[in-house]
Length: 94
Image (cartoon, rainbow, N blue to C red; front, side):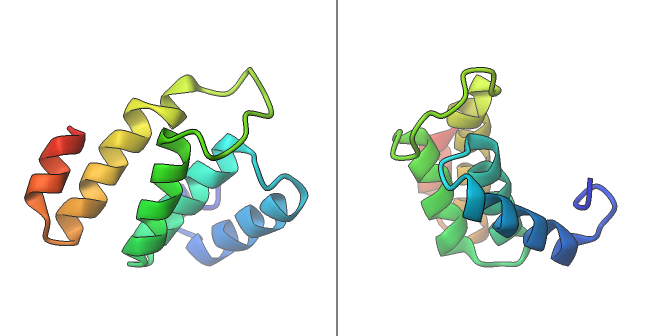
C-alpha cells in the first residue's frame, strides 16, 4: 500500500520490519527487490530476484503467488539488467 501511495521510504521500513520476523517470506523478498530497484540499488535488486528465481529463499507459505518466484521476478530482473545497460542479459531473462 505504501508503494502504491508513492510512500517508498515507509514501504522500505515496512518491508524491513517484516523481513526481521520472516526473512524467507517470498513476497517480502520480492517487494524488497522492487524497492531496491526503485531506489537505484540495482545489484541488490538483482540479488533479490535471483534468490527467488534460483530457490535460495526458502518456501514458507504455499499460498503465495507462484509468479513471484518465476515470470514476475524474471521480468523485473530483465528490467534491472536494462537499467544496468546490459540489454543482452535482459533479453536472456525475457
